Length: 286
Image 1: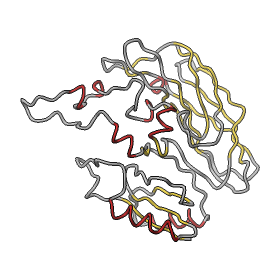
Image 2: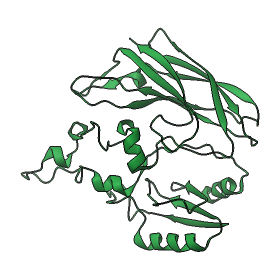
Image 3: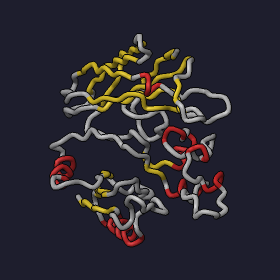
Image 4: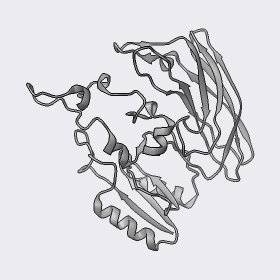
């Protein structure tokens, strides 16, 4: 097995230093292509703060994203690669393809010096209100639909793999007196390796006349204890009212009344890469 570590650094991404593309530096792309041609089994470790588009990953046996770590980062990496630890992490960012960056209509997020003529609609300035969040590319996982995801997303927010498989059942949702949602779901380890599972709950976005709203919002998540192979546990989550609210055009937040779909599972509804089935329930917000 060949383990190839690639990635970025503070010279390429840092506070006040944004990348202009989603790919690796040129010399690393050349190295990756050369190693992929000769390696019998290739594991690529990406060390970075933000997402990196590796291009076609069909020639890799595994890809592991390792954000900048501390003194035990190497130990943790070795444990995951050798299988002594069953990974259960989820992507806290969306890894976009380079095509997404190329097609973005927001090339400049700074308003320019005083007196400059900047088209805030096109250049996006600094306000979210200047983003075009209607059907199109979208700017975050909350606004990216499945069609766009299939074209421009390499790995979705909330995606993650394990050495085992989990099956969800018995989803129940109730509304508490304060308007929060109480969620209960059964999680079974249907594989042959013990492991923990991160459960995610996404609420369908509200419909508000005259403004763009999220397609889905992550309203709750939780992690089970290690589940023995073949065993199942029940996990309970709470989605507080502030997580159920919608950002309005004037900057305020409001719980928009109406019926919506709640999706619960090991990934998000917009994820076209994940294979696990999501459970859904209809909820009514007041």
